[in-house]
Image (cartoon, rainbow, N blue to C red; front, side, top):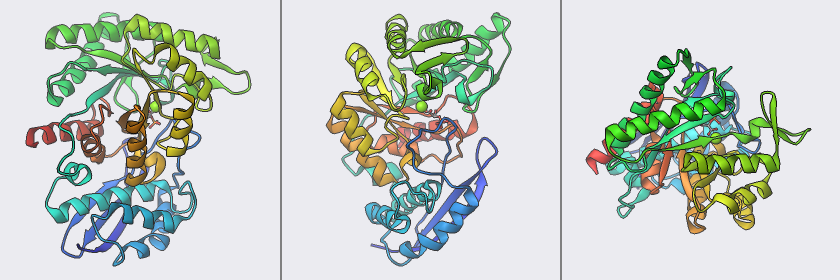
Amino acid sequence: MTLIADVSLRRILDSRGNGTVEAEVTTDNGGFGRAAAPSGASTGEYEAIELEPSEAIAKARELAVPRLVGEVFAGDQRGVDQALHGADSTDDFSKIGANSAVAISMAAAKAGADTQGIPLYQHLGGAFRGRNFPVPLGNVVGGGEHAADATHIQEFLAAPVGAPSVADAVFANAAVHQEVHDILTERGIAAGKGDEGAWAPSVDDAEAFDIVAEATERVEDEFGFEVRMGLDVAGAELYDNEDGVYSYGDRTRDTAEQIDYIADLVDEYDLVYVEDPLDENDYEAFADLTNQVGEETLICGDDLFVTNTDRLAEGIEQGAANSILIKPNQIGTLTDAFDAIELAVENGYAPVVSHRSGETEDATIAHLAVATDAPFIKTGAVGGERTAKLNELIRIEDNA
Ligand SMILES: O=C(O)[C@@H](CO)OP(=O)(O)O
Ligand SMILES: [Mg+2]
C-alpha cells in the first residue's frame, strides 16, 4: 500500500468554454492520476453543489488536501471519499464544491489503478467484474436547455441495442447522427449543434421523432442490427410549478396528459429508454407511468434521483422509475456513485452511467460503466469531449 503524496488542483476549460476543476493525484511510489469535473446545464434541484471553480479549488486546498496527503492510501477509494466528506462536512459538498470533490475522487481512483499497473475499470470493478459492455445512448437531436429554438424534449437518443460490440454500437450512433443531418438537408432544414453535439434544428418535437425514426431505420438496414430510440425529456425543465403543467411552447399538458403522452410515445416509437419524463418532485407520477409502461421500456430518473441513495430509496419504495442515471458529479464521489449503483441493481433498477452537457476529455465514466456492468452509458454521439469516452470504450473492449 502506498500513500497519497500530493494532490494538485487547477482550473481548466470545459466544452462550453467555462472553467472547471482538474485534479492530479500522485502517490509515494510514483503512481499518478488526473481527472476533471464535468458540469450540467439542466441540473437537478437536489444535486450536490458546484462552486465557482477558483473558489472550489481554494476551499479544497484548504480543507481536503491536508486530509489526503500522507494520510490516505492510494487505492483505498472509500478512504479517499470519506476524507472528502470529512473535509466538507455538509451533505451536498457546498463547502469544497462537488466539482473539486469529484475531480479529486476520480483522480485518486486513477492513481490507485496506476500504482497497481492495471486499467481503471479493473481497479474499480475487480478481477471478476462482469464481461458485458454498456450500450451507448447517443444524443442525435436535442434542444431544451442545451440549445435555443430547437426541440422541447431535451434529447433524442439513438440506442443500438442489437450491436454485436461496443465499437459497432459507437459507429452506429455516429451513423445515425450523420443520417439525421442528411434527412435535415433533404427537408431543407438548417441546423447547428447543441451543447452535446446533437443537431439542434428549429423543428417541433413531432418532426424530430419522425426524423430520428427514419435515421435509425436507415442505420438498422445499413448495419444489420437493431437500433432503437430513447429520450431525455428533462421534464423538470418543462414543468411549471405554479400552473402544474408541462409547457411545450404554446401547448401545455397537465400531469395526467403528460403521462398519457409519454406512454403513447413509448408505444408509437418503441422507445427503449425514457429519462425524466416527469417533474423531479413527482414520485407519484413516475410510479404511475412506470406501472403503465415499465415492462416495455426503461423509465430513468436523472433529476429525480440525482445519483443519491436516499432519493433512490424513496423511488424504490414508491415504485417510481425502473432505472437511475448515474452522474458522479451530481453526488460528489465515486463511492457515492457506486453505492447508488449497488442499491439500484439490488432492487432491479438499471443503472445508466452518464456524461454532463459540459464535459472535458476525461474518460472516467467509460471505466465506471464497464466496471459496474451498467447496461447503458449516455455519452453523446460525436464531438471531442464525447468521443473521448466512446473511443475509450472501444479501447477497453479491444484490450479486455
Ligand atoms: O440532463 C442530462 O441528462 C444531462 C446530460 O445529458 O444534461 P446536463 O448535464 O445539462 O444536466
Ligand atoms: Mg437528464
